[in-house]
Amino acid sequence: MMQTVQLAIADGGYAAALRDALSRSCAWHVESVQNPDLARKGVLVLDEFAFARQPLPLINPERVVLISHHDPQLFAQAWDAGIVSVVSQEDPLNTVLLAVMAAALRVAKTSNAAAAASGISPSGESEVASISPRRQNSSHKRCKTQ
Image (cartoon, rainbow, N blue to C red; front, side, top):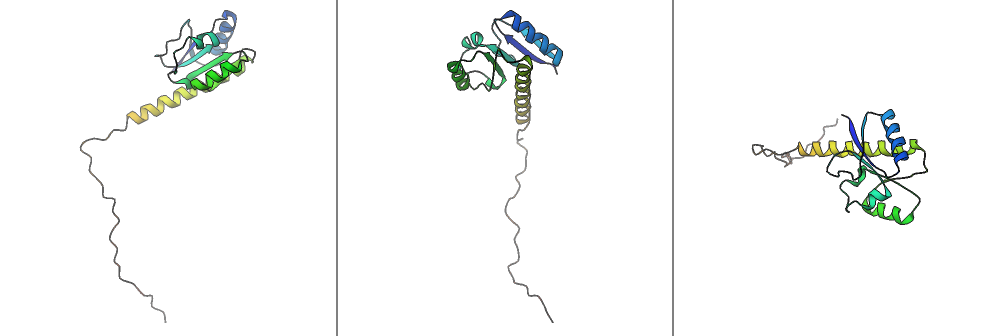
């Protein structure tokens, strides 16, 4: 299954370079968007301007990769929002790709966990199993020695 990556990055040159790198590295469906659709599944790559427009708390913040300059206040906001992948725009594209891949793995892991959890449902016809231990004979046995 091809994962979707929504790029909400104002710097057109940087967004194009990242889109090309993502397209070469994996089978991603990459979309450049002004405002990401939070209801859609997939990874969100946001710059600090797109992040500022998002309603908090974020839905599934583990899928967000935030690209920013070194701004301690923004780092604190990202931490409070639950974002675990923050990279700098000065970082090499390979570092950003690794952050996107890690977010995609987290998305896949949470999707698989949700599917597994929803697949477990008790049926009304189940039989209750007894948990009580078997009754053991309380008489003492002696070993015969000669």
